[in-house]
Picture 1 (cartoon, rainbow, N blue to C red):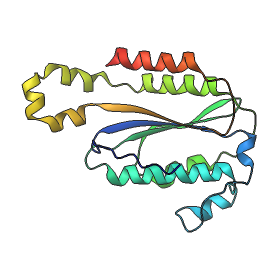
Picture 2 (picture 1 turned 90 degrees about the vertical axis):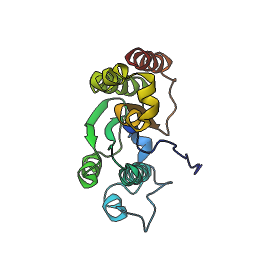
Picture 3 (picture 1 turned 30 degrees about the horizontal axis):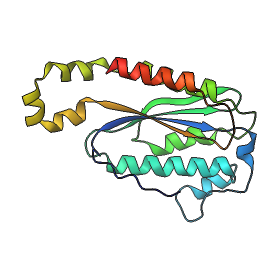
Picture 4 (picture 1 turned 60 degrees about the vertical axis):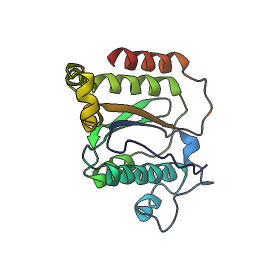
Length: 188
């Protein structure tokens, strides 16, 4: 709906996990990449459809995050799903957006839709790339130090974010989502 989320902690590092539907319905051409925006020409060669619009939105989001991260860069992972789940890349930094874009462009829409395995894979990636050293260091600091050096707090945590985009209808994978939340809570 075009809502702008105003982040209060732009310097917090995020592990952003994109979970993108690339089932056959994403090949419909009722929604297409927007002209006069970056990467339009690259997208319309093979992706002048819903998945192309999604790839463009993901690219623009990554570019915005890259330009807004002052000190601590984000890491991103990409999960594509239809009735199968693939991971074109995981836990990459945002230094080379062209490389990330080219990884996405290899995949065209096709197949059925299954949310379960995609959400489960997101949980696995978050767990795989959890870095306990960032949490242990914070736990060793006392409260006064954290308040005095508040900027340290921002750079010790890598916050996990899942961005799920689909045009499909499936049963909500409640168990998988609950498992991810429980796992993150246990990890700190």
